[in-house]
Length: 276
Image 1 (cartoon, one colour):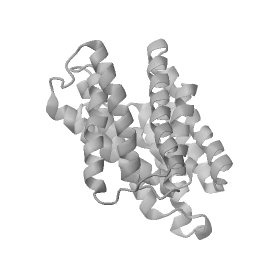
Image 2: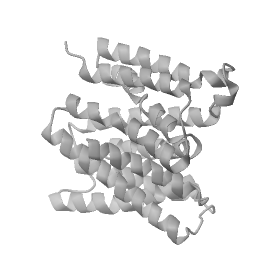
Image 3: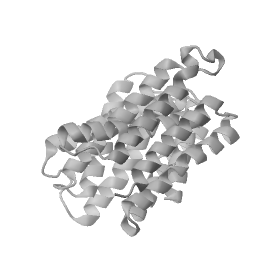
Image 4: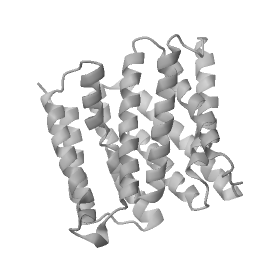
């Protein structure tokens, strides 16, 4: 899980670095999808199962929602400090709990209620400078809104994956994500394609590589340890993002981000470690 968190943090840093070459976000998404679709296709063929699955409607929905969420996540990474963009993504348990209650009839546990309470409190503290408490430390409202849309889209995708996990092989579910993301991002990109310089091409390649490192680490951890213990270590990604933001971009989180992020992390860890 530490390797996974480091991989996803480095992926985010590469996204932010490559955006400095004026590469559009949709082009970065397409580059990641191109690498992922090749790797995912190879994994499905290795298992000698059909790449199309049985529930194509839900699989296409998972791919479409996941692709739109990824576009929002990458946009927030390129327009917000790395630490704050990562923190806002950890609000997805709030949306997941509500969606699972509505669509999967899963009750909201007391631990999840505390997670929601602390997460919303943390979000309020992070955005409070923009409400006039400290205008100099405020974050752009549009980017915050897009980051929250990314977290919401991730929650929808997660609920769909939970529904599909009873019916489809995990490799097929994973394959549909880049399968939809690649053509969708290229269509939305249109005529805005920018020929990347060699340095940007290397960074785009590393976006795909570090994504794969993160996914492999996550998968191996889930196979060798209980989900609650493994997931708890994923939150070290926030620390990695803070360090990379400081080292690569000279970004230092404001006191509001430290306090608000602390509440979000506290809520997330309560949700993971709660024992009945």
